[in-house]
Image 1 (cartoon, one colour):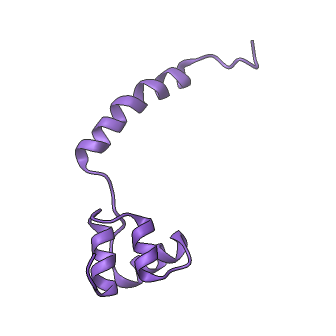
Image 2 (cartoon, helix red, strand yellow):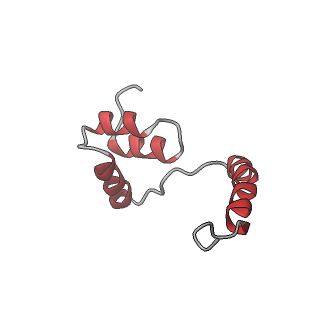
Length: 77
C-alpha cells in the first residue's frame, strides 16, 4: 500500500481491503484492541462478511445447532 493517511488505512480495513494485521502494522498499533479503539475513534464501522458469506455460514451452522439443541441431556440419562 503506498503512503497513506491513517484515515485511508482505517477505511481500507473497514472495507475489507486489508486485513487487521496489515492495518495494525501500517498504523504502528500495539494490537487488535488498539485497532478497534482507533476504528471507533475515527467513526469507522468494523468489517463484516458479505451477506452471501453470512448466508453460507448459516447454512452450515443451523443444522449443527439444531442437532445439538434437540439431543436429550446425557447427564440426566
